[in-house]
Image 1 (spheres, protein in one colour):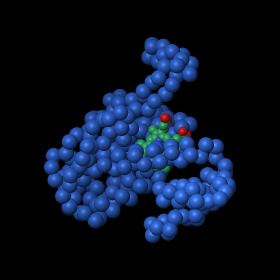
Image 2 (spheres, helix red, strand yellow; image 1 turned 180 degrees about the horizontal axis):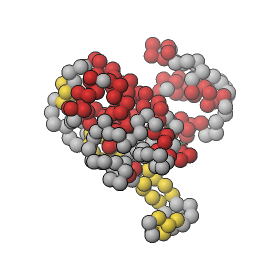
Image 3 (tube, protein in one colour; image 1 turned 60 degrees about the vertical axis):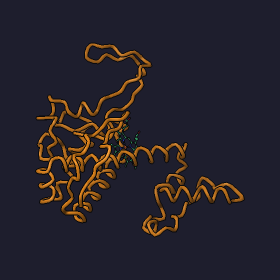
Length: 237
Ligand code: HEM
């Protein structure tokens, strides 16, 4: 997507007339881009004349980029610091899907979401006034001891967490889900893509580096603003 955007910027600079909102953007000519279908996401958004395209693309880049790379490092931090769980995954790589869901519960890349209150609401006996700015602690909710057994334990074999069914986190009535992809109408648009990216990348790491191990005691996963990830993760291959 980066190449596509750069290409658009340079053609815009050199062109006599502006790009029409309905122009199809061709894939850039890097070897990596050969596999990008001609009808890529950006072209479709332009075809449908999505309002405020630049803001939407910028949302996609931040929402889809930083979060996914953090969950990848959090997942590997969790596996490498819990070697018995890593052994389970090595024996049965399909369990990476469980490791993804449990990482999203145990150490999500975003620990809180922001909301502005539009009308007064009472929650647990406290009235929150209109205009208040809230931080909803999904990281904390994911460790609710009334929902999860041993919530502070990273356990990819737990039976009290939906795995691969994050969209069911919209409702707690049919079981437990983590809230790291949000809930309700603004539930993450890219959750299936994030799951695929992280599990495919992790499977490649497992196959390419079967003896992957920690090279030092890693620093704990650190919270900075709304995000959390390990400062660094030094490994031996
Ligand atoms: C593990 C990685 C990801 C995490 C933790 C994550 C988390 C979230 C959360 C919590 C929300 C709801 C925000 C709110 O209610 O205020 C959200 C919305 C959204 N996410 Fe993700 N996301 C991830 C990956 C992605 C990817 C890969 C994409 C797209 C390429 C994406 C695109 C979006 C978009 C467009 C929305 C807004 C949906 C709407 O408002 O209707 N996300 N994400």
